[in-house]
Image (cartoon, rainbow, N blue to C red; front, side, top):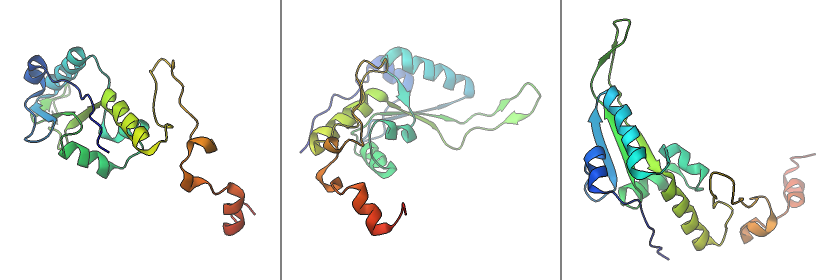
Length: 167
């Protein structure tokens, strides 16, 4: 079942800030100095009016592996913005600060929420749909039996009897 999601719209003004995407993806990469990176991040927030998290934080919204995140990025089904620092900078003490070997990468939180909703539709489990950050929508408890898939129907007592874990 393929669900069409409304991904973040990259306007021309935003593309001028974040750069062109890699071919066949929605991964926008820009390179520059530490100072440019700070401006880039502020412009990214100002132009999108969205929150951003690094790829490792997607697990807070969607119960998926890093491999699934990378696959979705390569297939162009997830938007990402990256900034690679390539220029050296002198500190106030006179030492040189080298460029970073790994870029800063950010994913829109809105797309993480959409992905969680897509998974909920596909699996019928709504425990990972996150509401607004102000707490207006509550999340369902993942430990409640009625929210778990049928494969989780074995009770704790059955598992402890088999394994002797709590003896």
